[in-house]
Length: 106
Image (cartoon, rainbow, N blue to C red; front, side, top):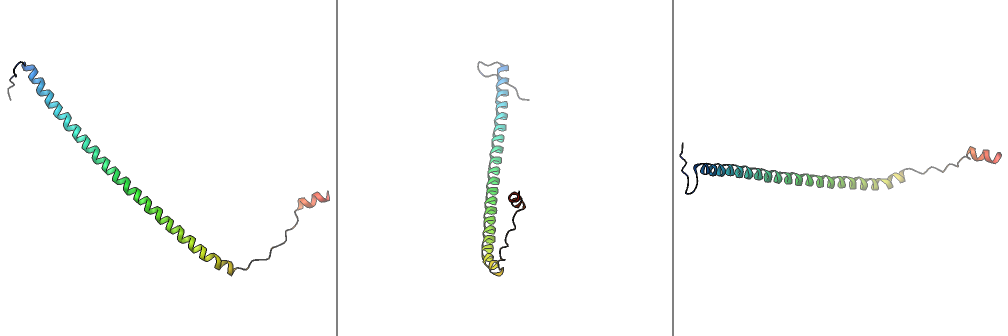
């Protein structure tokens, strides 16, 4: 065990309090530094994850656009061929509606 010798003008109790204050302040500073380091590490990890998610969303959007444009191009090419292959049926004359005939007769 170490002996505590009071400094000039300090009592033995004041010297013990100074030791306790320095020790507690060192512990608090160490915990604060550890907490700040952890917060910084987590912030960097979150930003990295968000950037990866954004890139993945952009890639998915680009792939969707490519697929849609391919389908649209294929549909546009196939539409004239389908129209030429199917002859249009003659328009059928419409039968008069029963209500209109009933009003005229009544």
